[in-house]
Length: 249
Image (tube, rainbow, N blue to C red; front, side, top):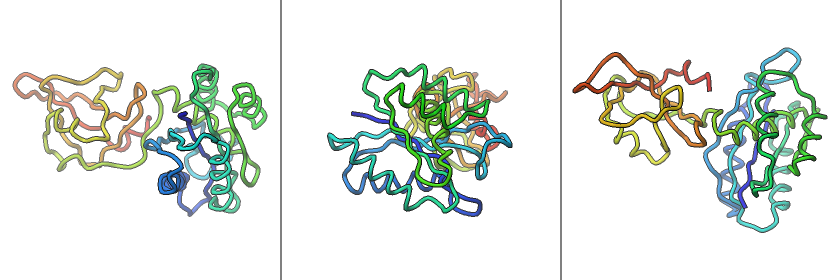
């Protein structure tokens, strides 16, 4: 069965962020033949003085195809990993969501979206997790990270939130490439406009001066393209997002 795994609040100022820990956890799961993980997505939560966070208040989530029947053993492994590797003083939380067809997706997605605009309590997170039969646990400090872990899973599930971890060089700055060239990269599932419309045809894309970030749109790992005024053979020329523009995801 597939599961969503989300972690939050594992770092402290001056240390590697939660994204690095999610990467290491995923690599260990793969190396131990415990499962297969998808690319990791980062989900921005509410930044407010009443919300304790290290730098950006974001959760990290990936999909897991478990190689064993008992997900409980793998949850124990991930919990022990967080307790050992999270920074002292952090408040790590772990969420594991079974994607078994019985999940009330709307409730989980709604919780994730609310965490982007308001301060939520641990109690609300545990109550919803119990109601939806979702594993939620804290592994150090105040355990406040359970809020972000649950919310991040909901945002990943929504299909239209988050930036994928990593930056990509897709060509030389200013170089113009075809859509087919971009779709030739195995990590790119689609090319879309900012309003989520597909980009197709004989369109060309101008590579920006910064590395490119993939984002989560329509449940896929995509590159968002902005239309330029330029034309090649009457077709529009698009460009990749700047680093600042990618932050809206």
